[in-house]
Length: 320
Image (cartoon, rainbow, N blue to C red; front, side):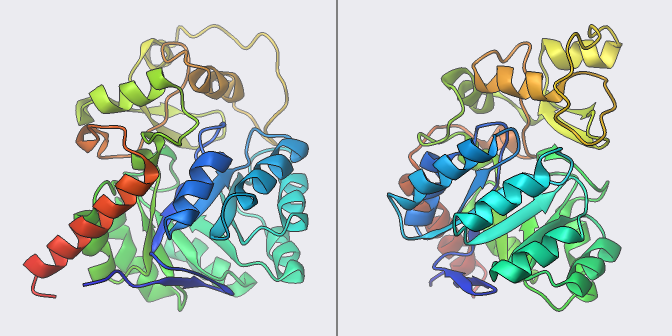
């Protein structure tokens, strides 16, 4: 039993697994390249990087793999257009975007001949994406990590998206092992996007304290925070989230104007950078559902082999 390949526009990966783009500076060249080299689609998270830094990450990934490498850039960041155009100029394989909807990005990617893959949380946005020329959509449920655009879990939302578009639909949210992949692909998904499980790998650019927090967490440690981006976000409970919940987080001292629109509850860029720097008490540690099922920090190669084996075991158990 083998996993099917995944074709999105002009690109095809041997495995139907997309590594989620985790910002800030969690999904960089080492992780994306390792996933691409193992047969999946590796994603560099562009949000929070300068265009020059993003270009350097793309070149670093290209230097060590000829696999499929894409970028994920939040529409909400102020330099969204510049980052996308930088990635296209560097010959990126595909672009994924979420935390907002941009019509312009479809034109930019179409002119470059690069597949555009929006993250969607409703049939209406999925239909709009297809209308503007999306090559595929990622349906991200309320059980995903980071910013959430829906209150429905992916297993409930997926059938609605499948009915609304004639495109490859990638499922995201609470996907940790190969059995999850088999379940969602059996339900009609063309592939899956996995974030949190890849955050806790050797090649992830998350610091050791961040990875240990994932390994030691239970599902009871997950909380929903109100993000300045304008969407709720799933994170791990720590002193920061407790202050946010109590309304005692100090006001922003210095705004770096990283977002097009900011609720100013706290500086999300500052908190994400702190987490990536190892401060998991005052930093924001985003996580996907199912974090309680993450118990180790393998290499990407080991993880991918494990996911394939688990998928095959689940398929055999189902008589597929």
